[in-house]
Image 1 (cartoon, one colour):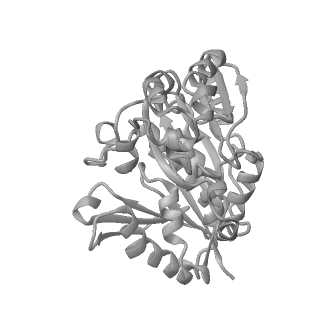
Image 2: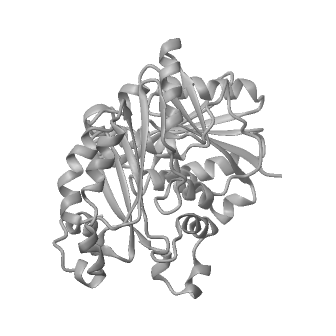
Amino acid sequence: MTTPVVLVAGLHSTARTATVQRLLTAHPGAVAVHHDLREVSSGRVERVVRDASGVLERAEVRLAHGCVTCTVREDLLPELLRRAGAASLLIVDLWDAVEPRTVAEALDTEEAAATLRLTCVATALDAAHLPVDIARGERLSETVHGTGNDRRHLAEVLARQVEYATALVLHGGDEDDHDLSRALLAHLAPATPVAAPLPEVTGPALRTPVLADRVDPATAVLPCDASTGEVTTVVWHRLRPLHPARLYEALDDLVTETVRSRGRFWLATRHDRLLGWDAVAGAMSVEDAGPWLASLPEAAWDLVSPARRAAAALDWTEALGDRVQHLVFVGPDLDRARIHALLDSCLLTPEEAVAGSAAWAGYEDPFAPLLETA
């Protein structure tokens, strides 16, 4: 019999702590483990273990290497295994700036599988802060105490916490804050339930490869065109490659006029590579997410995940295979026609398209430095 484990993430400790306390109260025998990572870069971490009645234990942990992953490997996992036999539920109360995927995948070991089962990844959100935080362009080092020289952007981490979660929990704020937050979450993570008051945490085990498929650019099920109150989602879907120089020139407009955008795209100079688009609060990254399936021999398809094959099948055309432009943009009152027109102007013209991939390979590619250092 395995012990259920729930991860609780969130930028705001008040929302996260309240969610953890409600879980402890709702599940007699539950235990929560929290690591204070303010000094993790120097190899020092405080571990706090509590139940519904209060703190059971405080201990200083010294790590061989100061990072989140080594904290999980060297202290969190052994602590969860040690307490599994006596606890009805184990709650991992994550530090503010931790992305839950890192922890979920670090806990996914053969050793843990016989004793623990990850049942829920919940992100606790402060309803009064969420609509502001997701649009903030500051880096964590400028905004979150104890993050040192962390160069990630606050909104970037928040987006990861929201989109990877299997449940979202709102805390604080007034009725208007909750209404706006729910509308925003319906666009950022439309398939993820907003739990009221708490998520289900004692069910079957989650599989981390399946969780990864939900957010990775090649397999993510992206939001649909929608408009809810002040929030708009615009979907752009095309079947011609993008000219790298024209797209690069348009990036500022596309990224700064929207709050969140993501998806997969096809660049003419990288005919066989699926590229991932990820932007939030004015900060953008692109990544090489592997080959388009159309560029692989059919025998190699068995080596990719079922989710990857299913995503490719949805986009498949006879001439292009799974090569596609599929981007989504979320923000307040977005101008759908303007976004479409701007992106359409970045596509190869019909004359450029017929020249073929050998000719496209000669185009100047300003994305090269971004992809080579990713």
